[in-house]
Image 1 (tube, rainbow, N blue to C red):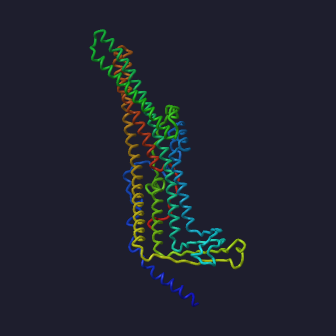
Image 2 (cartoon, rainbow, N blue to C red):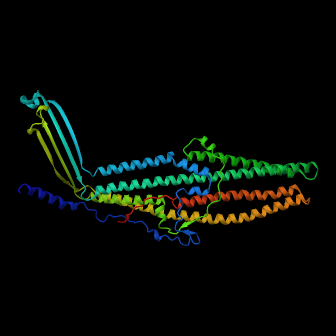
Length: 481
């Protein structure tokens, strides 16, 4: 009893002075915004809503081009960007394992044999100048008790960071699929532009033949001839630009596949079907934030920052460590296992900060700031997600309206061409009238090709904005807690 009193008094003194290190009024300054607070109803007014309108995981197959399906599948099988994302996930998992190991007991062993000789002038005649043999065999035990939950919070923070990187790896796959689809749509537009340029060149060359005949017959001057030559040169330049765009896009698609430039040469002309009609899920905006991988990853980082605050607060409190050492020591191996060779040491150890120059408070303040930064990033990502959906939807609406108007113009231009051809066959018109009627139709077809490509791209953007059909795990806890 008399021996335990000093120990108890020491423990009481340690607990009393623990109040010297205090968290004070340090706390985060922000909390994630409730998704229900974002106004969205008016912007989505009139949009087709459905309970099952989130895109499928393979949403690009709705474009109806088997070659595009094969290209996306090839890209997703493994490119350098995806390999890097997967490597980051594995590294985070290893770091989480290290954080988990830091809160568990450890047991180790060691063995040592040493020979020493001390000088007689220092150690005397008894042991000086003689070889001394020492053999030591030990087992070490250590267990840092996580009384305040700080080490567990650090482990959970590492897990949250792992979850964030796993979701970001999914986001990288979604971005890659969308980029391949967008590049493929641009390739289709480039081929359409090449067709229009070739047809315009053929039309202009026919005009040149007629212009030469009229000049030779004295029916016209050389101004019309030069104008026609200008149109031919312009059409050739447009065709060259379209071919250069085709080559560049094939090369870009090969890079997205993680292949060499020759892979792009094997990509045939796209055969896309009609762009699918847009549809929006009825559970906006709340469920959208759970489908978007970038938003979910940002939320996981908020949770990790919250656990970081718990870790910082736990460091203000006393830490308890259980340690022990059991072993054998003797002057030689022959005596190592005798009963009088046994040695041992162990017991609990308590330590706590008393004065640290403000290190703990500044560390907690930094963790609070990290949390506020994570919340700000989450809120900004959530806002951008909602705007991406609305931007894509508004683009689809506008492009569909423009497409309807362009169809009317195309019908009128086609009708005008039919009339010119009928008059020419009836002897009431000339080939010049027919060729002149072809020009606005070609211009409209070129506009239609660009509009069609924009409509495909807007559909791709909408699928990406809605999360691309990915199933990602969101945090279940409330970060503000």
